[in-house]
Length: 417
Image 1 (tube, rainbow, N blue to C red):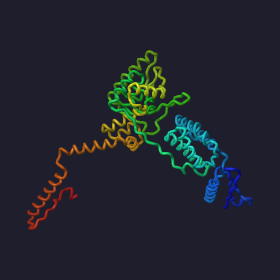
Image 2: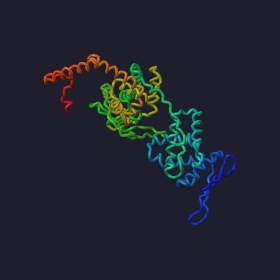
Image 3: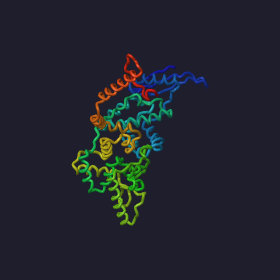
Image 4: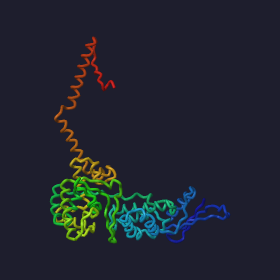
């Protein structure tokens, strides 16, 4: 197997691979590929091709750009295998960021340095590391599908280290700040929604997707069975939770059950005025005519309430973090907290709220110490038991007439078994 490199123009190199003769007609087989970059880039690509041909993994390059493949991928995979909300997010990333920067690069000539340069450029434009990491993961998935379909030989994103997201310190409401927050929220239509989020830890999409059929005010429970999202076009979509753990039942604190009971009476009165009956299929949090609230409107209302209450700026999602943090500090088992939050396993809960664990461990150690303070010290207890065993052993040997009795441990039922 031989290969040659010929410069076509500045920064453009033609690779020629001599693949021997065609067994069918005896003609010489030659494979051609163009590489943009330096001569070293061309030499590296030639070496990759020679190895792939010898291993039988060579794929003839197609005249397909990265942008064209990403559009095909959106239509063939994303729109069929993801939720409308997720698909919309992928479209924004691909069409606003990836295609304008990398779309013209031929898919067969995409190199790791292209991805590195994109990350650097995106950072200079003000994108966060977390956003760039999300772009990297999307591109990795799209290229993995291209490899699986035989369009390219390798996934170039495997050759680079993804950016590392900076973990920000979690913001939560202090217990002393919660009364001020709830009082400021009382004057808005969203008071009961924020009360529910704080006392259950539900996500925004979960609390907006609640219907009255999901709420049992007699048993003081609610069930999470669906989520509500609004697409950029204005359409609302209902989806099942992403995981089985997301479909869950949550016990309501008595105070929240009372608030929801009064809230339902108010909704029934509003519907009566409009000449409609409130049914189990109606959303718990909605306009008087039953249409759902816009999620972005709820978020903006939350920010206004935080400013009005004079509290440190936090996100609406941080009410969920506040709920989990306060429950853990109250001594609730992490497994129970994990189930309330809808995490797929308790490890996610422990990782997310690891900042709470040192305080919990310190409190647990103190409680253990306090528990033993009122009891004999362990070394005293062990010493007394050892002395008792020796005395009983000597007494048994004397009874047998042993002239030189040695201490022995009496055989108890536990030792015999």
